[in-house]
Length: 526
Ligand SMILES: *[C@@H]1O[C@H](CO)[C@@H](O)[C@H](O)[C@H]1NC(C)=O
Ligand SMILES: *[C@@H]1O[C@H](CO)[C@@H](O)[C@H](O)[C@H]1NC(C)=O
Image (cartoon, rainbow, N blue to C red; front, side):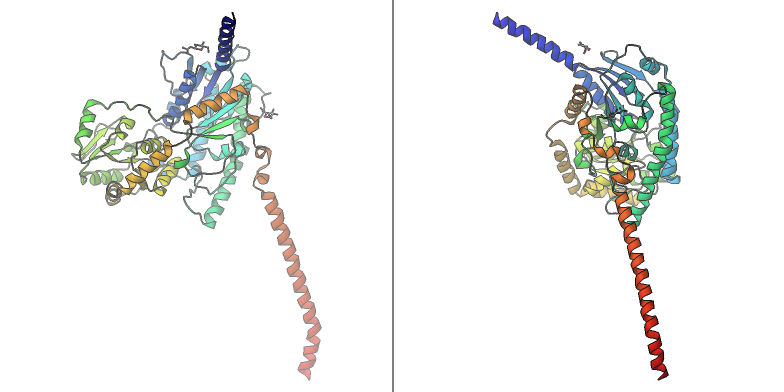
């Protein structure tokens, strides 16, 4: 009797437990870039495994009919709308970052409207359609007009980024703004190591000007879009943004430039690293196994392509590779590479993680992307970075500062520099040793970052938000956050007092002189 009562209670409890657990989560991840999406996807798939139901809005759907409780709204059309064909290497060589960023923001504004106008999404957020959620998870970059989706469903928001936070998000959530810090990936002048006073002054002006422009022009434009699609009585999008419960930031301490963060910023990272390495295609496996001298792997990632290299730089790489005793696997997105040396193998697509796992690999030549950096470190492979834009510079520099890689200039590199960099990294075994130490450091942590992210997500669901993680800095005006008003008042006060003192002193000297003058004149006469 007692036993059956206990078991009935247990079953009931388990049912409640499960009921309390299974939440409906809306994921909104708009950026058309697979390197962003694989991070979000790893988390949403893991949340589904936990028993939650997901509706995911993404330009890169998994499209797997076997995935139950996982509905996707396909935004793949955004790829056609962005600069998929843009030669970033060429653009970055001629244009200023400020102009590129302005152009990017205007593209994103157009995209935001296309997303809000997407028929399937519109159906989802139409009023009184019975759709219910417990949480919204959203990519926090430049799409704040999508935030009122949370208002529509009356749910707390978890933010996520696949790279370090942008300046606009740091500001929005009340995080300190440190204009000349090496962790910034979106400043005109990037600083790695110590900055001079002039660099800091330049960055200070640039950063606050950018934030001013963003807050007074870009946010209102996004707000107008939000009103158009969600109605006029939605709250200010910057108020929804500042109330975001937690923000997952893709950065792992040992491989990042560290900065102060408010508690709602939670580090994630390494999500996409394969737990099991897939076997290589047979022919490639044989080539790599046969490269007993070692091999080199070069890939510039998915946004930057090797075919974008200028003819001169491409020639320099070919010349350098032809002098090496190693096989070179080059992700080169064309069928043909003129003057390709014997030891170079070009492939349009490469199983990157499986290649990085091969024991004969000596060095990974890449663009400095975060996901590739994480993969290189997790397989203990030293790197040579050729950064092109955004956070690629940050990671390439961090790898150099840790002594696990070298950096080259993608616009002007010559065969001599390439050979020297490869020989140094391969022959000086300290690069490999430090990379293995870094790999061990990265693995040695108290919890798995994916499980940690799930815990925080469910924490926000359980408590229907996380105002206890909110910093009051978020409600302070810009000048108050960094005590600029106080510095201004003190320095103005100091300036006024010292000017008054100088004037008084000058007057006094004059006065005394006037008193002395007649006497000295008298003395002269005598
Ligand atoms: C889908 O979600 C429902 C409700 O949370 C749950 O009962 C069911 O087991 C889930 N199905 C699968 C295959 O995960
Ligand atoms: C933000 O959070 C505060 C405090 O929890 C609340 O009073 C306010 O209504 C929230 N604003 C929005 C737009 O959600």
